[in-house]
Image 1: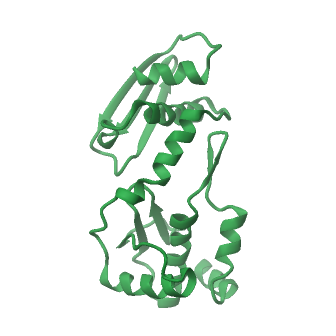
Image 2: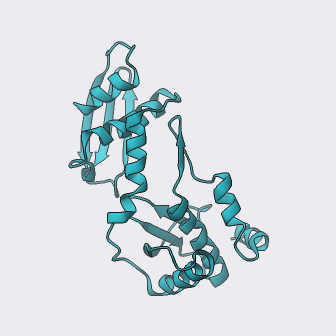
Image 3: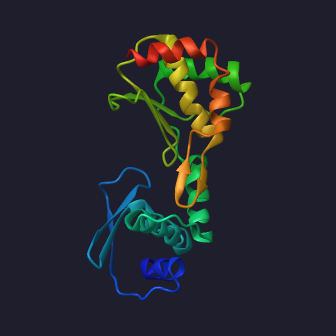
Length: 204
């Protein structure tokens, strides 16, 4: 079982005293997964999309979940494989859910800030958390814009922010992913009227 192999590679000096179980579920979106621990019992629940994926990548996924459960900082070759896999999922994700108005805003933002070089992702309106006005999913190459936004300038800025996640991806170290890096923040400040728009967003 790849979960056992994940543990052995992550903790080569530790005794294998745990029971492992891996379940595939259709309840997850994209390539999501989670893990839980009860004493010496470790259970990992993976989206069904993970079934055909190479075990070397799934080992990295489970190792990521393990260090979260054990609250440790580690990094392995398999974890690097897993993160590269996630970062490149957008390449093969189908682009068949694009809201017409958001497409227009994407074209404007893409031309103005990215020289028209970014590939259009899926663009949808949806409910987001109270503090979240936009979200980018690597696994489905989808940007979700909060349906609470109705100001075009704010929509453009949130769209730009999420497109930066698509462009710059994320840095990974010791089991943690860093999305808002210094490079990201420097890019973010290139948006016209950045400071004023940030103030306005805080009032949304």
